[in-house]
Length: 267
Ligand SMILES: NC(=O)c1ccc[n+]([C@@H]2O[C@H](COP(=O)([O-])OP(=O)(O)OC[C@H]3O[C@@H](n4cnc5c(N)ncnc54)[C@H](OP(=O)(O)O)[C@@H]3O)[C@@H](O)[C@H]2O)c1
Image (cartoon, rainbow, N blue to C red; front, side):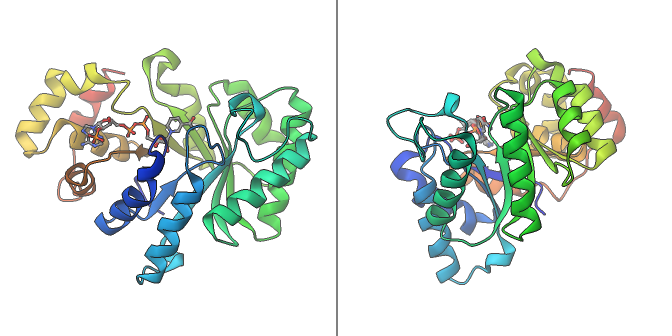
């Protein structure tokens, strides 16, 4: 598994070029969604196919996509009909993802956000468990789940336990401290998005600026390194190859525990 994931939202027609650039720069993990409003999953698929044709091994790639409930879709452009029952929506979305991505196996499959009624959410989760049991999916999880009780409920009823939470990492949710603690106990990977954009105060802080000088790394590199050292897997959607290369080049240093604590104090 990887410790940083390339995010493909909002890249529109540039998606194929940027995903290929990300893979050739060293990213192994790619995140997308069957949600045409924000993601061109089909163009991610072309990039993956090209990369494999160019010699990258499928097994070395980690492909993650999502089932987006109707509340997150553009009603005029979505992989299912609003009149479909919830399991047909899931089935059509999953089929579209495999077709778009040109793969039989999806490494990681997420519910894009909780939705109601809870009975439908559970039905979807149960079917996703079958995808894992049938060998079509490696692991399952949920995104935008800021309600700890809901996460714990899902975990408790699950036969195939969730392995991923993908959440916005920001002050408004208290940086998901309770959820992250649970993830640590239950061996669930916590993936963060908005890591840089929601936290300019941390990037500008004296603590991070000092570490940037000490290690001769950008503040973004320091913050990504911090996240990885506290067991968070950041999503990174940069469009710049310089940033791609810089962000992947953070294995040459390790933040000391007091330095980690100094950033933790900002959360
Ligand atoms: N599950 C969900 O609901 C959800 C929601 C939002 C996002 N996501 C996922 O998360 C991915 C990342 O999105 P995000 O909202 O977290 O933000 P992001 O796309 O990673 O954006 C980071 C911003 O910071 C800038 N930046 C400056 N220095 C950078 C550096 N060294 N490295 C990287 N970026 C740098 C980037 O500009 P440059 O392009 O110039 O580098 C960009 O504008 C998405 O593509 C998507 O896959 C998921």
